[in-house]
Structure formats: structure tokens, C-alpha cells
Amino acid sequence: MIFADKFIQRLNGGYDHMLEELGGGLSAGERQLISFARIVLKNPSIVILDEATSAIDTETELLIQKALDVMLKGKTAFIVAHRLSTIRNADRILYIGNQGIAEEGTHEELMAKKGLYYELARCS
Image (cartoon, rainbow, N blue to C red; front, side):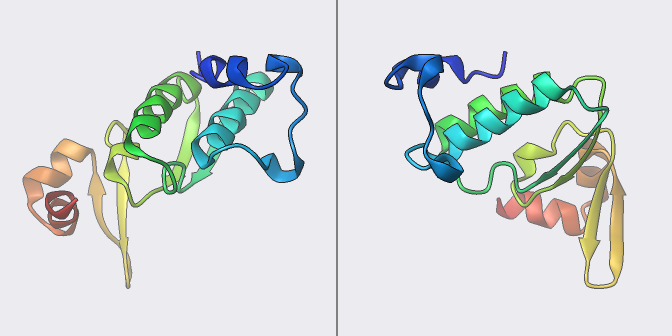
């Protein structure tokens, strides 16, 4: 469901593997997927993510995008992101500039405005 099973099975001992402090020995993406699995187990109604895809490779980002879709279904989420792929499917996106909220809308609405969000997306 969170796409962590494949790498967990490769760990010495699989699901019984003892992790090092702070997830040492795992990649940034693997640590992120473990964090997502914990969120699924806890099942909170509100999730706050800060740069969920900031330090990962493109392949892992795709797994994390799929995991986000599963993990956030039916939840309220506040997501801080610079990678637009992380927020593309959000119900509401707030582009925050120097003076506060500069633009607001869905990805499609913001792209149609051809404003700050559009420029950011075009350069990404």
C-alpha cells in the first residue's frame, strides 16, 4: 500500500530488521516511506508534511507520489512543497510569496492564470 515492502524485504531480517538510530543505513526515500507507513498505522485525520519529496531521486519520488495518494485519501493535509508534483492533485494550493498568499486555486486554475505558480511550474 505504501510501497515500502520491496525494500523492507531486502533488509537483513526483513520486517524484523533493527534500524539504526534516526534511520541510519536507509536512504532518504526509504526513511520517508517508513514514515508514511507509520502515518497509515496511526491513521490521523490531519497530516502535515514539510518537503516530503525534497531529498529523493526521481524513481523514489514516483513511489512516494503513489504512497501519498493512498496515505492522504480522506484526510486533511497541509503540505509544504517546492516540487510541484507533490501538490499537483491537491484540492487547494496556496502560493506563498514575500507578502503572504499570492495565489490560490487548483493546479489547473493556477496554470490558467499564468501568474507566479505558472512561472514556477514552467521552470520546474
